[in-house]
Length: 386
Image (cartoon, rainbow, N blue to C red; front, side, top):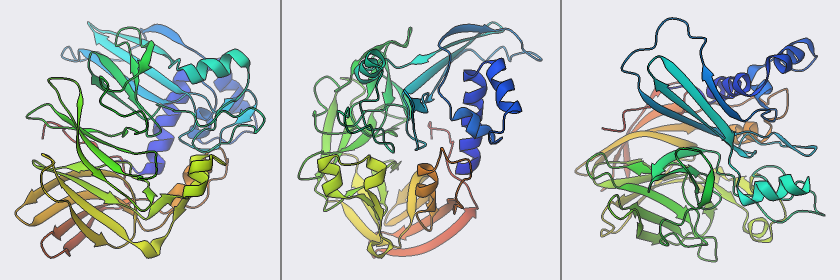
């Protein structure tokens, strides 16, 4: 199943709105002159936290539907009068749906990180969000917003972002425990990816981060399923801090497609503006395909590709010298601009990502085939057991 990025924003954000807003707020919105797109309704601060038993069920729940479903996303779209501009902005709001014996129970609340608690206690916006600057008189740097993804790890639920370490949550109460450093194996100055991959055979995870120092190194890790710690496989210096959001995994390799989207270093180091404001896209640089051995012993393979913007990948296989990669490519940076204009009722025109299947001969560096499978799609969902 695939959704276009725009459809995904509207659907997921709209569902979040219906969960977060009271019926009276929804009624008020419908009678106001506010924009009517469903995702705009979700661009409000979530008004409720707590636990509920969902009893109004049409039909019958399948008896085999037993377990828990976790969901996360930004839950604030204004902070003490300061409207947040970017789709990625906002304090993390986590929900857990528990299915059992024809019952559905919901627990939903904000992640009470130290940064959120400080802002709530002072009544001020103190930290830069990804795309919105804090007032200069109060700002204390950038906030680590762990509002993108959730994974189970080391008897906790880890809430992930790309701006720092994951937030470890109690799996029962969803209470914030600490920022996780994977038992001391994730360095303080290295971020952690929002989309780690898990080997269906070994159970080990694979993740990456960026060294927030002079080397700007791409750090690649194995998450050991037995010890719950991490082992560094690669440390690859970069001339630019590129926007790397996802990777693909084959049986024996990790695959990165690195777009020519990067952060301006002076703005990054000095913290003069939010991260989104420091992003640049330069089509002349081209994209880079990076193939790494999962054991960390082989020399990386790097291949130059035409420029594109990429956030997410599907699956990948590598047989001999032939790599087949399913990936979602956009021909320009319009989607980046759309994310920055999330609070604008009138969205700018955007060129959506499309699903491509790239076949690359890694021995010659040649693109053997580039087939577009689906127009205007992103956010792949596939069976992680395979």
